[in-house]
Length: 163
Image (cartoon, rainbow, N blue to C red; front, side, top):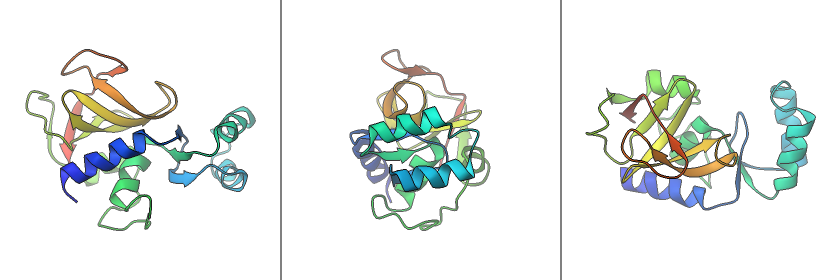
């Protein structure tokens, strides 16, 4: 997959009906699926959070690293752990998958994976990112990389690297 194909898919997903949900990579929000996630992560999937997610259905569910994995795994025809992308956490992606890491945002190229402790996003160019986040509407959303410019839904990232 080229960086432009990667970015195109991230933008497409950001235009879909999505919600942020821990441990997800594009699954449909259904009662059965939410029950499975609640059993897996009971502290995160509280009754109130489950009800809120179900009220948003139909939608697709993503967490930050799940967005990256889903794209690499061929979303919407997702094949789990395919295309050389294992099932890793945000820190696992950062530690094991990325090359050419940098803190110098003057040299960032579209398709870079953005990183702050506990979170990752996708740089799409022109000082903007796509990320699955609980901030800015609890969904997959386009944000501004404040390391580069100011704008709506700003986030300052600490570093970036390339898959």
